[in-house]
Image (cartoon, rainbow, N blue to C red):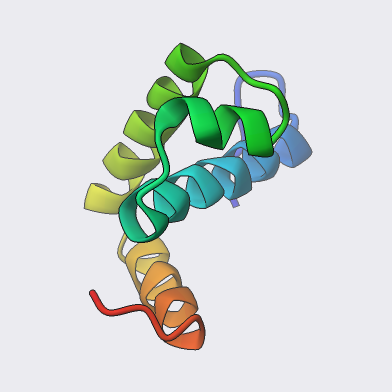
Length: 80
């Protein structure tokens, strides 16, 4: 588990889950940034874009996250 500078594990985990939801929504459901923001908490699209970019950066470097995303996609029966 990653800790941010304040040691707030819950907010880091929450950001990861939200980033995952945005990532999957954009990648597999073809949702726009505006749609994702609207359906997942009334968030403006630039914030959605930043969250997706941060998630993708983590996904590039963290093998355990890569494995988890593949497992989730498999559970959802999503073609990768």
